[in-house]
Image (tube, rainbow, N blue to C red; front, side):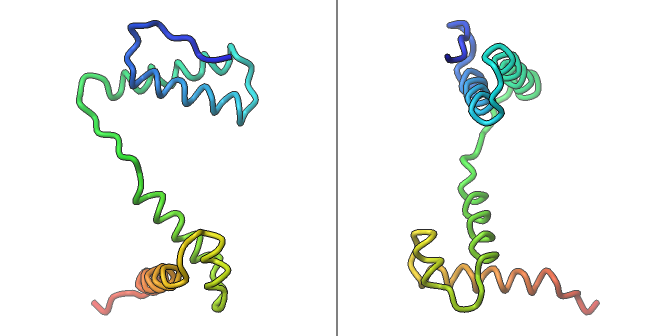
Length: 115
């Protein structure tokens, strides 16, 4: 089953509603009616809060990459560059760069300033 919307319902909001509906059915195993009501409520909330303006919705590549990079750094044990390269489908050199950048950011976050 899928979410049925009026033909004149805004396309962007329809995409939000359908994405929410699919997630609710697949992950929370909600029945059609409950998932449809919740999905439409989500889309309507977006319409009320964002409607009327031209909103840019980023694809979130930087967020996804930084999340992936933190995941790589969290799995790093000092000598598993090759394993991580295979697991994340990256070169070993790229894994080394990510680990180095994350290590520097981690150290910087833990150090306090002198003044």
